[in-house]
Length: 436
Ligand SMILES: Cc1ncc(COP(=O)(O)O)c(C=O)c1O
Image (cartoon, rainbow, N blue to C red; front, side):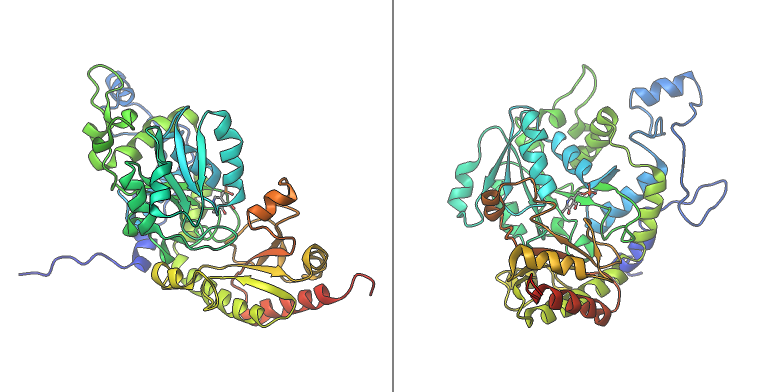
C-alpha cells in the first residue's frame, strides 16, 4: 500500500501553493493579468455569470487571476480555506469588519494595536455606526465575558502588536470570542504565517498588510484576508444573517452554498464587488515574488532582530527594549509558545533622554532609514510620538504606552554588524547634551 501523500513543507508551498499554469502560454511565473474584465462566451454565459451560476470570471474589481493566485497562496500558508487580496492592510481591516458587522453592531478589541487601526476604529468606523470597545489587557475571563452584547460581531486583535510587541494569547482570545458567539479576527502582519499561524491556535479570520514582510521589498502596498473556515456561522445565525439567510427569493444563503467557506465567498462576491478595494495585479505580482522567499527572509530578520535587541539592552542610553525574544521581556513566555521560530523583527526602544534624545538619534542615522513602514529588507526607524501617534494628546499617548523617547526599529536584512554600528553612532549622538 502506498503512503498517504505528505503535505509539502512551508518553504515549498510559499513558492508553489495556489499557482496554476495557463493552458495557452505555459508561463512558469504567475503572469500579470492586466485586464479589467473577461469575455462572455454568449448571452447565456453573461446571464449565468451575473446570477452566480458560473465559476468563470466577469470583472477584475473582485476577481482577477493574478490576485486569486496570491489569495490562494496566503490562504494555504495560513491554513485557511479561502482568501482575498485587497488594496492595503487598512482596506483588509475595513473589508473584514464590513463583512461581519453593520451600523449599530459592536466589536471587542484588545488595547495594543497599530495606531492606523485605532484611528479607523475611533474615526471612520465610528461614523459608520460601529461601536468599537477596548478591553483592558488585565481583564479576567469574567470581565471579558461581561463585555459581550447581543450586537457583538467579532473580537479583534493583533498577534504581535505594532509597535509594543505585547504577544497576544490567541488561544485564550479564541475561547473567549467563541464563548461569546463571535469569530476571532487577528491581524497577523508582524509575524507573517512563517512565524505564527493564528488559525492553528483557534483564530477564525486572519488579516495582513501584505505591504510589509510578505512582500518584503517595500515596493508595494497591499492587504489580505484569510477565512479559516473554522467559525460555525449557522450556530450563530441571528448574528450573521448576511451569511445564513437568503438575500433574494430562490437564492440559497452563503452558508448553504459554500459551507464553512461562506465568509470568504461573501467577501469576494459582496464586499469586494460593492466597495471595490481592488489591488492592481502588478502589485500582486510583486507580492508573489516576495512571498517566494518569505521563510529565508524571516529567518534572517529574526536573527538580526534578536542580536540587535540584545545589544541595545546593554546600552545606557536605552531605558527599555520592547522585544519579546529577550528573556527580560514580560512577554517572553508567550513568545516561546506562539513564536518559537523568532519574535518578529520590530524592536522598539525607549530612549532615556526622551524626545530631545530621539531627535538627535534619528538625525544621526546614516544606514538606517528614518521613515514610516515596517517589514522592509532595509532597517527603518521612526520616532512614534511625533509621527504615527502625533495626532494624540500627550495623556492619550501615554495611555497608549507611547512615551516621549519611544523609537520603533524595523530590523532589516543588512549585516547585524552594520546595523549595530549605525545604531551605536545614533545612540552616541543621542547621549550628547543639547548644548555641545
Ligand atoms: C499591524 C498593521 N496592520 C495594518 C497596517 C496597515 O497596512 P497598510 O499600510 O498596508 O495599509 C499596518 C501598517 O503599518 C500594520 O502595521
